[in-house]
Image (cartoon, rainbow, N blue to C red; front, side):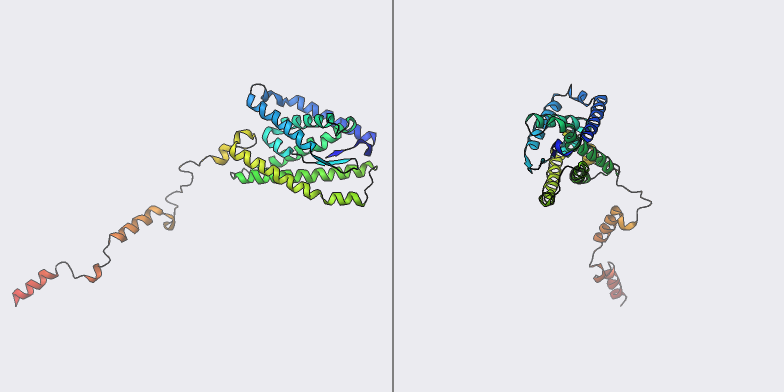
Length: 276
């Protein structure tokens, strides 16, 4: 989402610049670009992600009210590269947004916080919350971190944007604006679905591309004795070996034995004839 600077007082814009400077210092301290130095494959993926992100942001809907709505795609970038590189990708996309004439310098920091830093923070915090359950089911990661994380991030961005416009006091919320707000679910739900689809595809087809996806934990086969219970505690109804041995014993018994005479019946009959 892109907002015009005319809706906010100068103090709010400078506060956004202050938060933007803090974010730059945090990124400079972490130096996430160090992982790109010796990894050419990661360089290509990251640059391609920056270009795709810029193209996605340029496809926006101008409400002709100083507000433009566009898809974010930040959840996929965050889960694929981590929060540090995601901030860099969002910053490059925001610069491209500025140079293309879709943004202005006064609101650069504010729009970066809304479209980049805030959804990255929400996505990463939600991802850490999902990981706290230590689930071995990959669909928990895909649906929890990918779909639900994006959905939560979009809801937070929409709420913060409306709050900032109300706080600025210069944006007139008329009937037309609330009609546009009613269409937000048409953007939020597809955003979550698309991010969930990309995370699902990358996690299954190229799990090494998603740094937050532990394929060894999700896809690794359990050890041979992991599901074997102690024989002393194993009930007879669950002891497959014992059941098979009993079944074999039953199969060895002749089912017609009860209807046949004893084996020595002929000898006894001959003996009786001799006595007579």
